[in-house]
Length: 55
Ligand SMILES: [Zn+2]
Image 1 (cartoon, rainbow, N blue to C red):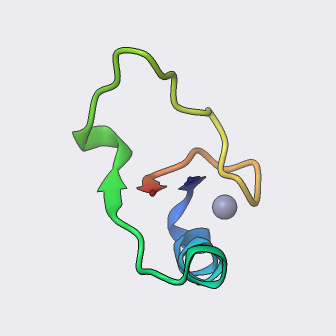
Image 2 (tube, rainbow, N blue to C red; image 1 turned 90 degrees about the horizontal axis):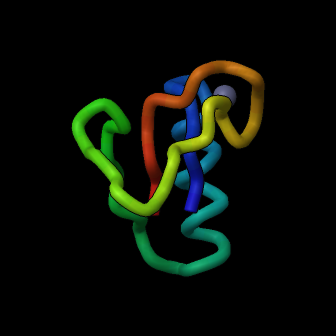
């Protein structure tokens, strides 16, 4: 699972496909809510606020 900014969305998808050999599902963090999980406050690849959830 990756939580990434717009800039690193492509990189997250590439890594996901490398690891799982299947395309990920993409969600906009602002459009989903979680009860048991607090979204990280920074992108997995940089210090920017994340925009997308790649799972
Ligand atoms: Zn980033």
